[in-house]
Length: 228
Length: 222
Image (cartoon, rainbow over all chains, first blue to last red; front, side, top):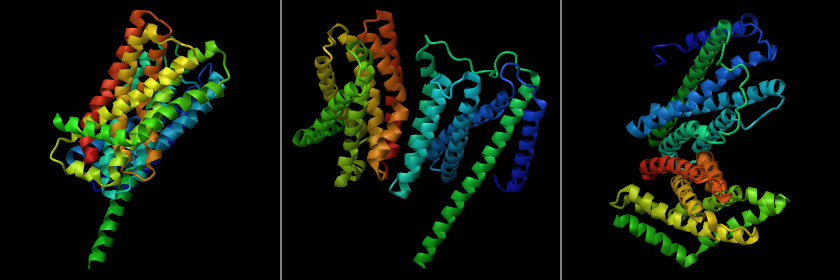
């Protein structure tokens, strides 16, 4: 993959895309009527959230790939997606309250969507902590694969369970969400920003898998030196 | 099948000789109920409203103690390697261990429920069938996750810390739906509502039990 598509080009595209996204967010998208300027954080919040949620799906794909085919690159991919996805998920939990406070008047509420995001954040922590604490390095991949798969099943269960749970409560309206009569310019901004964040996500994932590969090559070389 | 039975009976026998895990689980469950009672200084009505959730927190915490023990004990003398080498299906080990964990947690739960009935002067008898079904189904899913995560955590440093970090986010919905359903059953809600609650707990528990069963072989292999 890295041979086909140079890293520097990937980085350049990401940066350029980010600049375009920033332009759209702050200068092109119209101001929201009720929420005003603060609504512009929505574009970043939404893009971070979607990327973080997809991130756990990629962790699952990598986990299954390792358990099924014993493929080291699949495990590297899962590990990288978990680390980068966790950072994105932290971003969601920071930008969310920043937006909620002026709009809803509260920092946090246990609304189904917030609860689900919080659980995904905990699942990222569980996955990364497990990788850090496994005592036998040869077993990390299989155990992380099991935890990554169960974690993904949990995020699927989230979507069922949230519908069942406290259905009698009215759901707080996620202000100006992508439903209901969004200005076309806002739609464009949403998708361009999300694209920029996905591009950044995959750039960071490639950097991280490169580190894993280099580490493995280094420990192999050390091992061979010791044998000689 | 006989392998499942052998492992199940072996776990019961080991536990019967020391009675370490079981007594710790019961005492811990009782302590949780006791501490909650005093950390929220509430009247009887309020306490009864909180009782279902409180019971599930007590079950969750005392379960963690038992699951930790379940595979940690096998590791001490390298028994886990012997089990992995034995010519039996890895899933037999999972089912045997799961049954033993279910028995231990079930006993602890019975003790906690009995004590709460006394302390809160609350009768579980009118809703006993529904409540028992919810506890059984919820405990099945919770113990299945505890069994596989107990085996995962046995491979880590600081396994006492690792198990709850893995268990709680994944078992979150089992606990939430089970305490919701228990609350409905215990406050005497309509039959349809209670049945809906039982079915939801059953669905989520079943998903996690099957997933743990299928994934267990990857935890065991060396």
